[in-house]
Length: 307
Image (cartoon, rainbow, N blue to C red; front, side):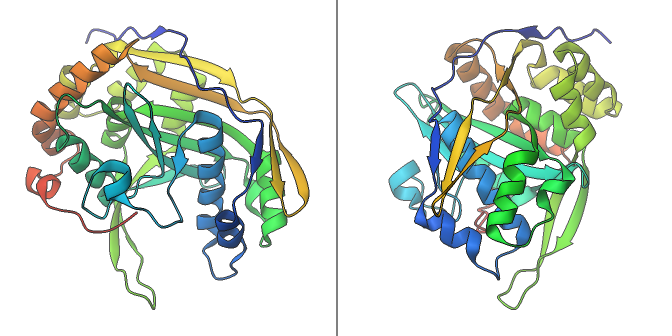
């Protein structure tokens, strides 16, 4: 098999805001005693990501998809960044080094793909997945102040992936069902369990080595799909340190310790990204059916579970 050559290329980033003043919604959300511990952690990192990378956080608040994305389904991405050239949707995931795996909901992913595949080809809409890792000591807190203080000191790194590399990760991930039944409803939800080791390879190794490592783990059928349709030879990587960010919360100011940020993109400009997304729309059926073992009917079905 010919090896994929992945080049490094600088990526222009929006200038981050130096101070994160938490909104009342965030304070209220993080303080509610009945809210799941992991939900508080996820919302913390969504707020951090939005301030670092640009965009608006729609998670944990009322979301008007008709107003924001001109979409009528129950669709709620974590972060929406818009400028004159394109709209970027981002799903934020976070896990500790103790767990070292990222649950990625199948319904979330299908909602994103449904939306992207229904957009006009003249529109530039992209999808990123962002993976935060924090040290296990950062989560061992039950109170809001102690929890946030721990996370500001224990955040380890952030990996940002475009859709093609997200697909590659999912192809190598185990598929599980988790019971989300509560007194308010729910049921079993399908998840891919993305391995922290795979995320670590993309973060810590030379890009061509990391991408080929993931390709070589696939079975022959999935490997063929990845090499033929995911345009992995045209991904670019940038590594940097997160700039200092201070968090103002209920009269106290916390400093988020520096951590590594690794970002991949498809190509150097919107021309190649637009071309790949256009080709993806033509080939998503075979990519989903043979690469992820999801039926095309499941993808085309209207997914009503909000996220």
